Length: 358
Image (cartoon, rainbow, N blue to C red; front, side, top):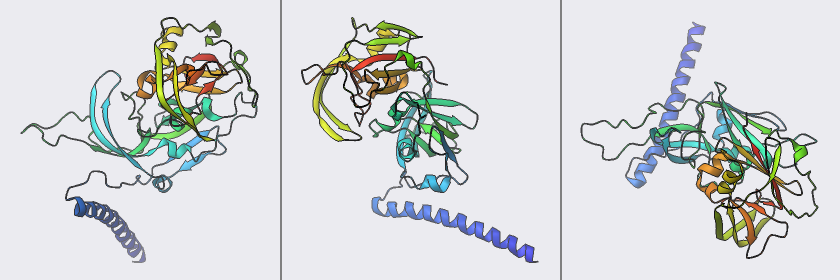
């Protein structure tokens, strides 16, 4: 008898919790409807119970986020028009999710003691799902770029369907009819779903593997001037080629740093980075990564996807003049659409092609 009472009490408790959740959800919806008179789509959702995410690798500890911890992050809502890399249209959706930036901001990166560079801007962030599938990003493209269209870990998906569908003809363009299981990596600034990933379980932060003997060593606090620019591929070094490379310029570039704030508003001119890389690394593309190194050892790692497939990438430059003058340290890498200028590389001396990140 006592055992039966315990079971009944547990069942009643579960029903109350379930009813409470739906009451809160309905209350949120009704509160909005009372003001707008319309049925809202972007009602607050929660990460599903049992969802977990691990962040590890070159970090001070292993970070394990459960549903409660993930729900503590400020969510965002985005709309996507999804196309597979091969060109197949997969539908239109509204996602609720957590910007990856919000998660990485609270993760302490710990580089090896003898690392070639002491900041995380040359590191790789890898997302791995339950099946072991992986996609890779540069650390900087997740933390230094403009976050108006952020990469997110989505936990809720709603189909977006036409408001005036054809009569007696169901709308069949949305391939995803079910909600998300766990967390889905969504990259709304990218033209296709090549780096989207379902059921993400782990985020791994790592150093990119390169032959550092071919690159300048870090000279923190020392000033240097780059008299030449070298491109490196497969261990072979060549001087950069600029003939035939597209020109590029920007006016009113607002420059703010992560560490020291406002740096000025400038005009810049030089060469389009995507065109320069295509010229010097024939056959390169979105699958590759590129390491940019200054004469004092400062580094920035950029992914081929962001350079060749995004609007921000189309604005990236090799800068030869700032406000009408040559930069004092020599040529300069300028990801001019970034929110922070920390990925700028003054006194750029080497560009290394990285064929693949695993």
